[in-house]
Image (cartoon, rainbow, N blue to C red; front, side, top):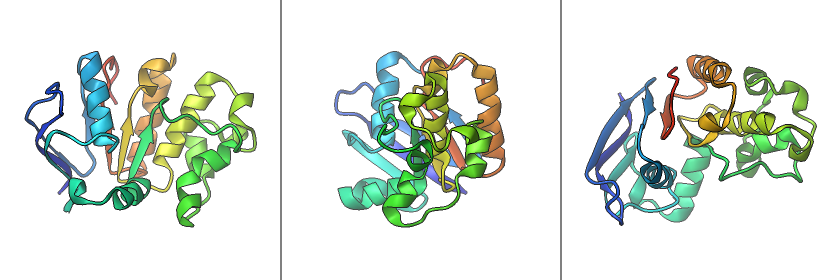
Length: 194
């Protein structure tokens, strides 16, 4: 069953041209690309920039036909984004940062299990400025997987982490426990695979 598909996608600057992709339930997809391509693809996949042409489907929903407001709600419910471009909010605890999508929609569940999977359960009551950079990256990932997102897009987190093997195992563990149905990794420096 296809849960995500792209048809004839091109960006406005023609960096990406006629991209076709179909991803099925339980698949992990890596995009190995040059520096500029990864950023453009990330922005399109996350909905921050519209493509020049093409179609994007999330299940049977034509994602590009939705209003900005509906796309935002759909992103909160179905898509987790892990990127340093969307850092943790320092005025909130780590736990509040992880559950922010649930807080916005009144669908809060206990983040303990997801925090344990990323080895940050002991940090939940602290603020981002009180923890290390590596711990912040793990928290950003936990936030992306929170509430069993259908799709998780991981941008630059992977190549910023020094312990890539440990992180790969964490992702594999989270993914295998069905905290996400699909994982998109638009990475430009991917060296390890799950």
